[in-house]
Amino acid sequence: MNLNKLTIKEAHKLLGRKEITSVELVMAHFDEIKKKDKDIHVFLSLNEEGAMVAAKKVDERIAKGEPIEMLAGIPASIKDNILIRGIKTTAASKILENYIAPYDATVIKKLKEEEAIFIGKTNMDEFAMGSSTENSGFGPTKNPVNLERVPGGSSGGSAAAVKAGFSVYALGSDTGGSIRQPAGFCGAVGFKPTYGAVSRHGLIAMASSLDQIGPIARNVDDAAAVFETIRGKDELDSTSVAMEWQDYWGSPLDIEKIKIGVPREYFIHGLNPEIEKNIKSVISKLEKEGAKIEEISLPYSEWALATYYIIMPAEVSANLARFDGIKYGYSTINKEEKLQNLFDVYLKSRGEGFGAEARRRIMLGTYILSAGYYDAYYTRAQKVRRLIKQDFDRAFKEVDAIITPTSPTTAFKFGEKTQDPLSMYLADIYTVSVNLAGIPGISIPAKEVAGLPVGLQLIGKNFDDVKLLKIAKIIETISK
Amino acid sequence: MALTKKEVEKIAGLARLELSEEEKEKFADDLSSVLGYVQKLSEVDIKKVEPITGGTSLESVTRKDDETKCVSDSQMREQILSASPNREDDYFKVPSIFE
Image 1 (tube, helix red, strand yellow):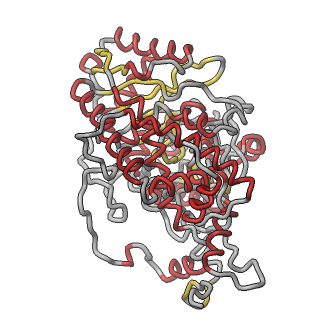
Image 2 (tube, rainbow over the protein chains, first blue to last red; image 1 turned 90 degrees about the horizontal axis):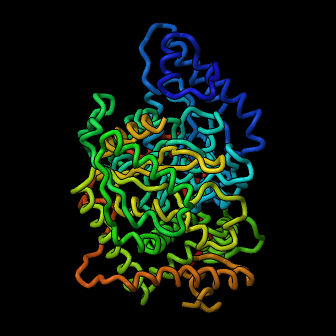
Image 3 (cartoon, rainbow over the protein chains, first blue to last red; image 1 turned 180 degrees about the horizontal axis):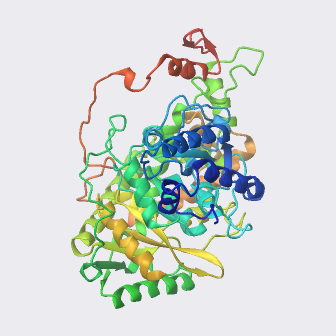
């Protein structure tokens, strides 16, 4: 039995039947990491000791005949911008190179209550800014499917961990596509829940009106199981919402009652024709099985990326102001003999601590928010953002879900887009609208192109996350 | 939309970022190219549109100001303080700001 390819459900069953122990499962994952992570570079830190202690605890409960939670004893890896108390949390930035988290993120607290096992913290683009992990302060992660290619980003380490068999599932964060795009590039399932469904307390903030935590997993059921655990209102994130959630595990949806929208703006030039073919073939299959397919229009899609590249850096510049060389993180305060003034401590700590992309976005945001430009950029973008949201509101009066490619290309090669920031930004062209509108989106594997994974994105209505997962499950089933 | 090196210096100062001379040139190019791209938004008619101001439609969410919700034990307090690069007792120490 290959313990490194199990789904959550399979692992849970094996643990319950005492066919394997959690300790065996955890050890199998660390063995795989020791064999392969030299080449892939998924982890920024490992939690071997902590994981073994937690696994033993679960095994004792099983031995006593206690029933265990769905995620109990099952290895997870966590993106390194999510705080686990007592464990180094860097957001892949030199400015947090030695930062030990003093508290648990709410999602971690919830996973701990289920006795999930944390294998380690995964690599990412610095502060989640990027689409390839090449912006990591500690070197990029490689795509386990093809080591010459990027795993996508910013949650590239989390997606690679799931694909490489280093953990059964992972947590990522998604601000403009950072869960869905790497899941697509690595051939995993990546789910960004509705804004407000999952607490971000303890997530190192990038762009607060867009950030959302979600799972990366081997199939839709697993993504749903993790989502059920981590969602919910949290006093410590005032944007989180209390909801009566539908039950995912109940009867499946009747495919003949599902209406799927295909937005014409997402199937235009710039999209790899082979990817288009594979997505279209899923659409025809859906139609053949009885789903209603409707061409729709999201006319403001064309301006989504430009809107995103105003709102996101504006919020980044505000959020990253907290890294000042005083409270925590890298600082030059003790570096020089002669007493510096406070302004110099800020300038030098931040100038030396942040990588190029972080500095680029902080500057962009500072400019956009500065006197004289605020209305021309920021207010205008917030208005276009409303138009983009209205596009989706209109569409969801007609359809249950919208189907698109996750990305216009398959995983690209290292260095291909690092010289020109704008070309890197275009990797997110199909994913950013979902964050701007606050709605849920999921990427599931479609048929590969030239040996590289292709992601199919399914977009749902606000807080219709469970329905979206159910439709994704149907597509997953008929694509097999 | 081309930013000058001087404008980049001004922004970097506002953002509290020290840049090398080389970086100033590079960032002038990079920022100009992104700002050029986002100019695209001037094509959109926004006359009757109200701006969205956040990710949700929730308004005025409050909670009790109870620090034990965040700092749950004394060990955590200690961990937070000891993360400071220049701690003195229970303070974050900064260079003097008055001449």
